[in-house]
Image (cartoon, rainbow, N blue to C red):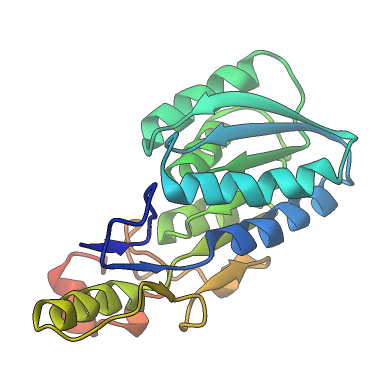
Length: 226
């Protein structure tokens, strides 16, 4: 069994190929706290409870928030990897009348839903946001709506590494129990100005960095080029 981008409870697997989401979350949460002036209400939209990556994000986020006692975290609920659920949760929180000076999303779906909800609202300026992951559509929303946003993207190369690791294991070659892919290209926190990363010629569905791993012909065949 090869685990790709998400850990499980226990060690009954062959190899875990995974970035360090915890350290990535620390950087993002630190940016968000600073952008908020280390005070105010922070709208939190969670990911998928029990998921290894969500747990790692939450651990890093919580560590930073403990150092910022003047930031009040308002839990808006879990998006469960659904953009529509995240948007609904964020819209409900916005409609409550609570003024948020920052927002956090566990996972790309949560971040996208938060930004969509604010884009559809009358709240301006939209408060700073942080979380993952950096799809071209999420970057577009942040740029168009002038949101101070920071994001994290798993490198597209790690999918190939997962398959290569599985192939080696099938052939009987010994593979490492844990493979940290954080040093791979395109992994890391993306900070403003995000217009450096948004590429208008690609569709909203393309994850940041995929064009470094696939050819333009590949991207076109996957309908990732407009």
